[in-house]
Amino acid sequence: MKSFQLFASLLFLSFNANAQVQIRPSPVIGYEKRIMDYIDGMSIVDTHEHLLSQAELKQKTALDFMVLFCHYNGTGASIGRLLKDSLSVREKWQILKPYWEGSSNVSYNRIALIAADKLFNVKDINEFTVTELSEKIGRAYQTDWITNVLGKGKIEFLIQMNPVRSINNKRFRYVVWFDNFININSKEKIDSIHTFRYTSIPNQKNVSIQTLDALTDALETDLKKAKEQGIVAIKTALAYSRILYYEKVNKERAQEVFNKIMSSPGGKSLSFTDAKPLQDYMMHRVLDLAKANNIPVIIHTGLNGGKTTIEDANPTHLVNLFREYPDVNFVLLHGGYPYGGELATIAKYFKNVYIDMAWLYAISPSFSERYLHEWLETVPASKIMAFGGDYLNIENIYGHLLFAKQIVSRVLIDKVKDGYFSESEAKNFARMILHDNAVNFYKLVP
Image 1 (tube, rainbow, N blue to C red):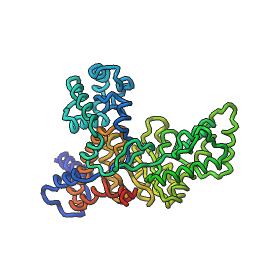
Image 2: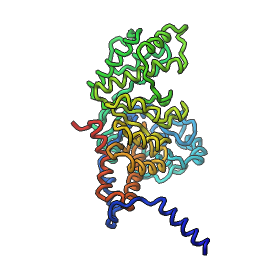
Image 3: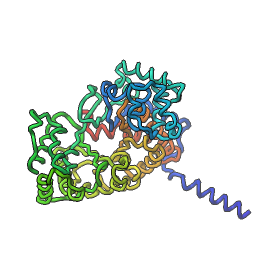
Image 4: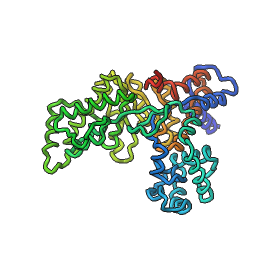
């Protein structure tokens, strides 16, 4: 009897450990479908893409089933030669098959599956379907395919990370990158800045930067031009190459590093430790310009492809910037994965820090669901942006969006079931995090 009572007590505690605090009355029957239908019918703002035009994708791939693996390849296979026309579709599949069989569980590959199903009515990817799937993809790219899929996904606006405006679509808005002005450790990198300049400068090959003042002047010129062209934010992805901690460095120290770079024998690169003061100084100059021009700053945080240690991409390294620049709004990307709790703390504490869930559902649906629950309890809903595909190709953007809609729906349904939100509140929060917050934050509507 005592054993049974102990079991019952543990069972009771386990249920209550997952229970939500009830604030609202129990919902009216049918609320689950009403919430799902509401989210499915909503206009969406896609806050983060690297979408290639149809012509660019055709140059990169053979426009067959491998389109679905041309960006985040969750199979682990080396796919370079599988993207070209040198092999038949079936030959490509035979090479990919063993990798697929060992990794089809990965979220990237599940997105490929849902894209094949919902866009091409191909229910699986295997040796019996890749030919049909490839033929349907090829036919799709003979139409205005990107526009068609954007319409199907009800994507009203799309914020494009690519600085080159290769896609002419009224839905698109653009950001500007200044990482080439920051990530400097050699004279070669200083000399190559003109190659990646945002501004169009006659005789660029004759343009050179010889002084620190010339470097900061060029940065200011680029931002002015970008602003004239209507960019909505500044983006930085330096978490792929260095720690996110940017110290406040005076001009004299930065000048010393700049001079050392310019006089380095044979143009030898400085170590990161030696170059860091100049890089940090330049990041602060970017933020000064962001402040002066009232432009938000988007920062890659978390998962970084192993190019630096994951600890270097922890969003907590940025706290000094949030304090130093309270008038600059910062968007932290990818839910800070795997630092979801740290991100919640930062976004809760700093009024100028916002959460963007771009890429996150593709990384881990369960992480996304768990932390969206937590963020909706800890962070104002007005500071969460809940979808960005972060893909090169439109098919996987659409598949990723379906993931996002499922997870957002499930989280909000759970909140309503438990009485934490009312049904009307859940719908309002869905509209905020999937549409309105981004429209307001990036000023997408005049």
